[in-house]
Length: 393
Image 1 (cartoon, rainbow, N blue to C red):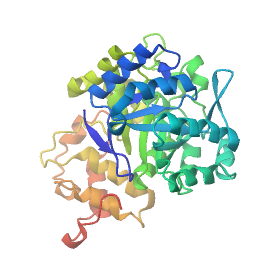
Image 2 (image 1 turned 90 degrees about the vertical axis):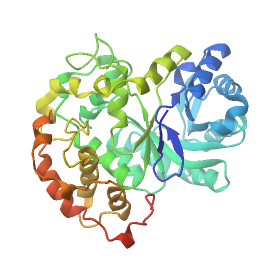
Image 3 (image 1 turned 180 degrees about the horizontal axis):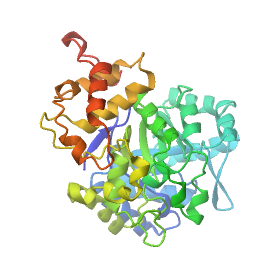
Image 4 (image 1 turned 90 degrees about the horizontal axis):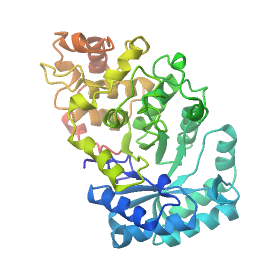
C-alpha cells in the first residue's frame, strides 16, 4: 500500500481505501471478511455513508480493536426513511443519525462529511441554514476531526470550497465523468449510459475544480471510480473498449489533489482484486490506451499520463505541468505552497534542453516545451532562505 497526504489535514491516507455502500444488508460474516481483507492490505480510510443502524454496527464490530488504525469518513445529513437512505437538512433528524454514528464508532469520526451538495438548493440548505454551524460545532467540541463534503457537481463543489469551511472533498472521478459537460447530471447516465457524442475533452469546470483543490490544499477522496461499473463493462463502456480496474484506479490517482480512492467492495475477493493494482506494471495501468479513442478531444491537453518520460534532463514533466496548471489559475497570486511543492522537484522546468523527445512521445500533442518555458517564468527557483515554507501552508 502507498499513502498520501490528505490535503492540509495532516492525515496520511491509503491510496486505496474502502467504500462500504455495498456492505449494506449483507451478513456480518461477509462484512467482517471484507473489512479484514481491506485492513490486511493496509487500508486505513473507510467511508460509511449508509444511515442504517445494523450496517454501521456490523462495520464497527468488524473493525473491533483496530479502530485506532482506521479513519472513518462519516456523512452528516444521511438519514433513513423506510429503510432507504435519504438526504436530510432538518437539524433534529441530522443530529439523531450522526450522534448515533458517533456512539457506534467510539465517539469520534475522523472526517465529518456534509452529505450530498450537488444543487443550488443543496448549497443553500447547508450554508444558509444552521446546518453548517452544527458541523462547525461538531469539530470545535472534538466529535469530528476534519470537515468535508460530498458532491458530484463541479460548480457547486467549487462554490462550497470557496466558503472556506471544507477541508476535503469526496468527488466522483473517472474519465467519462471528466469529459461529461458540467451541465449534465452524472446520475442521469447511470441508467441511460454515456453517449460518446457528449465527450469534448475534459470538461473545463472539472479541470478547474481539481486545480482549485490542489491550490487550496483541499484533499480529495474518490467515489464512482468505475462509473457505476459501466467503464469496465463491454456492453456499457462509452469508449471503444472497456477500461480495466487498474486503468480506472490509475486515472483517478493521477488527478490533482486526489489522495485516496474508495471503491465499493463487497467481498474479500473484490478487495484482493482491487489491491492487485499495486502489483501491475505501468503498461497495465496505462489509461491512454482507452483515451486515444477520444484523441481529438484531448488534443493539446496534458492528462498527466507521463508518456513523455523519460526526459534526458530527468524532469518530472507531468508534475511540472500539474503545478503550472494550478499557477495559471491566478498568475499574480501564486500561493507559496504551490511554489514550495515545485521546489521539491529535483529537476525544474529551466533544465529543459528543448530536445523534443517528450513531444514526440505525447499521445495528445501537448506543447511540452512551451509549457516548460512558461513554468520557468511563473515558478522560478526560490532563494534558499524561502525553501523552508511548509508544504501545507
